[in-house]
Image (cartoon, rainbow, N blue to C red; front, side, top):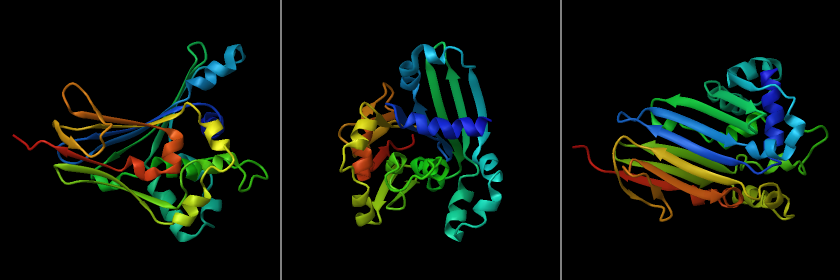
Length: 245
């Protein structure tokens, strides 16, 4: 039930304005936690009194549970696709929905030992998003993420933290560009935010629009979600920390 609700929620979320935050917490030894948070409370506000009779939801499960129910079909996928899904098994999902408060939150999170274990959570959502019956290339959900056109990698050497997107297939990325205005309409008002938490003060950030917390240990960068879809390299980033004392 909770997995079916999550899959249905992905459809609903991406037909309403939502706020997406890529939270990364980095420890001194390079380990940490990634939390990919989606605030789709706007959906509840749009529904109004229609959601008044709905039960509250606070549920947590893993992608592994989701994939276990589809092992037969997954076994028929190409080896590289199976390997990609295998990497997602340790990702957990928490859903919170409170109709009375008009609150709808989805969080996908994972622990990591090294920064290079971090993954593109938009790709993860592509792996599990439900297919609409009869949907093809015109499926609006196909605009989420960049498929295999891009490759996102993270690194941290103790001083420099990097988030780097490489466009592997420019033609494929161009093909996903919004030419009808559908994407702009779907995601009007939606934002994609990077929020990175570090164990020491930040010395410098490559992005000039970055904002800092009062203690300079948290870096925040925000873009309209449509800009992220059109030009994912805009979110490339290097953060340099102060030296250890």
